[in-house]
Length: 153
Image (cartoon, rainbow, N blue to C red; front, side):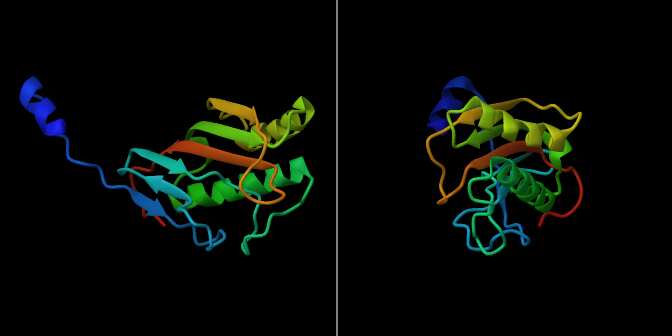
């Protein structure tokens, strides 16, 4: 399709951008996905949803929205750091909370806002019916600006 479109429009063919999948060494190694992906240096980092799991893959703090949000932020920081980025590089985040109670969503949001501080990038806060791990109440995924220099983990 791209070749046909190029012939019709005269547009130059764009070479595919290789993605580098980031396996954060300090997070649970049994996850069936990469913790982040970087397109090109100076481009974007896409994180997997950061979950409230410890290094052994066990969900932490069952039933505690605030404690799970704190663990999720810690895991998100670790995944971003493995890609050479930080919370201040985040361009957009999505926060998932297993609850229809706005009070629970706001409890999680307070943790997220405190972690991001003055860096108030666009974010979406959602109440959902379930997340991937048994007992999981919170998950955050982010898109960040990738570093222009440095090594990627």
